[in-house]
Length: 217
Image (cartoon, rainbow, N blue to C red):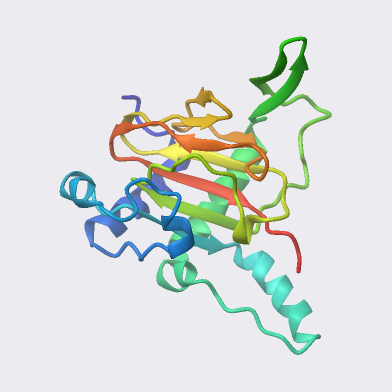
């Protein structure tokens, strides 16, 4: 396996430390329902650590929302992931900024043909690049094999998200409407709220990050 690019090393080290110390938080019931190994992780725990998922928020975005909510007499609680792992949360959004500044992403496209719809992955061109895409949230996943689903809940309202895989693993592609995509240190933009997607089986240590922004309430 190829080593991680230098820009990923800080996040990957922090994720591995959480697993090694047995501090991975419990996964929500809603998210567990779409994780194949969400209820029984014995085999994974014995080899690579606890499986599961939690969310962190970009504190820059949270600060802005806090200011707006205070004017309405409301408050926004800091997610548990930020409370437990503030350095990891900061590193995750630093990584997203580095990715956005350095490269155009691969993107899943749905095109119509004479035989129906076709799913393809292409480089984003200048017209498609979303310069103002600054995600407010990130789902942090460890050894989580997701079953076929479309995103909902806290992610509802945004059409696009960005996913990337980290760690030492084989296979484990994300499959979008039947098209497998290798995301190991290769970010991919796709519409998780309308396109059905899941995780292929894998071997080894697999983390993934999914940046997104829920619709404003």
